[in-house]
Amino acid sequence: MRVVFAGLALMGLAACAPPVPDSAAGVGFGDYATYQAQRDAQLAGQTTQPDTVQLPENGATQSESPAANTQTAVATPAQAQPVGNPGISDEQDFNAVSSRETIESDAERLARQRSQYQVIEPTALPTRVGGNSGNVVQYALGTSHPVGQALYRRSGLRSNNAYLRKCAGYASDDLAQEAFLLAGGPQRDRMNLDPDGDGYACFWDPAPFRNISR
Image (tube, rainbow, N blue to C red; front, side, top):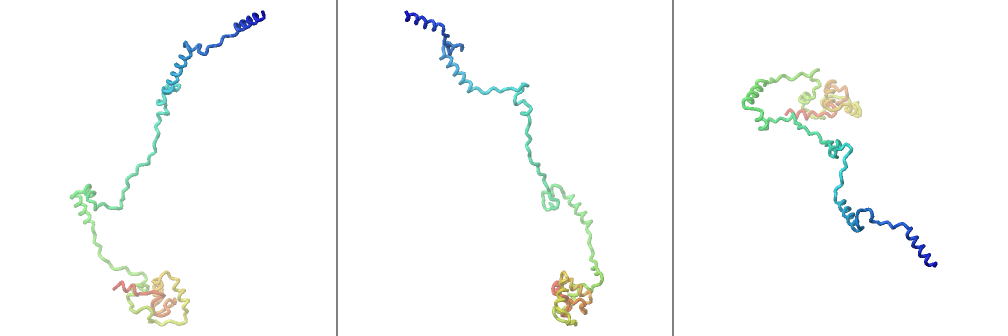
């Protein structure tokens, strides 16, 4: 009897247990194999289809948006303007002259230039202000004795150092000779510029002026 009651109890428990849900139920297919095959086909098709372009809220595509229509300005360097040299004449260029001149215009220009041509007559040289007593060129051409030949008396009490200091005070020997002549030279040497008495101050040499005149 106990075995019978135990079997009845198990059958009652089995009847009260909830049914096992079907994993393929509710998908609209008769079996799970058909569902799985269709699902794989859909997944394979999604990988090959292009992405759908989402439109903005205003309905315009990306190419129609104001930002897409904005043209980017490309910075280009300013074109260099041709620069001519107004100081160089092109009168020797036949192509340049023939493009703007004719035989008649060239003859008119030549006649106009000839009418403006003036001959300047030579005039006398200007007279040196204050006389020619300090003209080193005239003095060099008016003498013929060499440097170092004593012609004038000088005092032997003057030192050589004082003479060198005096000569060092002039920017050139020509200026020293000019000052020597203006001070009474060559007869007198008040400035101690000609201690040897040759008539030439400091280290001045008349030879370059004489050579030019020859």
